Image (cartoon, rainbow, N blue to C red; front, side, top):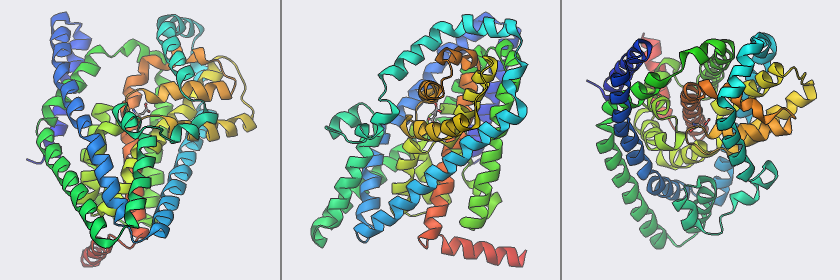
Length: 428
Ligand code: ASP
């Protein structure tokens, strides 16, 4: 049985068990499931453990094996431009859908008060965290690490990535024999990390079972009922982006067969969904890009670590809907120019968000502030955040993988695969 099938069984079984004990209100069952969550958390810690060595090694191999610095500039420029454009499209989908559906217009007054009361305290915690985060204006400074080891220790990915790219770019201009030693070493680190990932992934089906059972056992279905239209708007937007925008890119720009693309990336998607973390999923995303999609380490090793940190289309889309929803509930009419600022700030905020669970809700506070919508409105949507976080993370990872096939294609890779497909299509 393929690993993906086993993980899917773990997911479905976890959901059935979790929802079952939840609806039955069976306390001992809920407690048992919660104590099992430790298995899921251990799994997430284990794959996260390998993220820093893997990111550093794959970036160094990827960047140092580029021919020269101009090549780095070209791939880097393309990747960042692609990421920003697709993210702006994602937020726009969220904002347009919210204008059409008006999810905030359908919340009864008593639900609004109840939600604000129930989640007000928790929301305040997130708002305070956002105040500690560097504002959008300081994003630039936060890109430069004054101590890369500390950035690595704190899991501060973006400055670490920028330092590593700089280091690898410098290595690429060294004399051939020195460069070969460095690339050889990090290539070995890269492969060793992949072996560890394969070992850890062997327990993924059980871990996914535990994670999903724990989330669904605690899930507040009552809250979902009052936020149904809001949640449905986010989900509709995410589906549209995942199967609309990316499908266009994959089919027309990367000329990769659609069905095959979506089938081959399922393992990364399901893991992103179960862990709610692009960072924790990154090792598997890289494995999928190289082994399943046929991208080189040169492209995947550069595009994916960067993507897991800066490219969060699902998060940005959700922020677009959330800002509109909160404004609508509070009866604030957002002028179209303000909505345009939301597109811009949500795009930047998703760059600043870390690829960890719930990061998007913290940077949402920044977007709300920029649009002059009360940040306390976060309390309205916290109740369904976990489940939406799972979905948006799966979209974030899908976005990174669609970028990989696009960039790989423009770099003349995937030729064999694409030609194979065309031959098969002609034959079939
Ligand atoms: N959990 C998301 C991720 O890791 C970030 C977020 O939207 O909260 O990609």
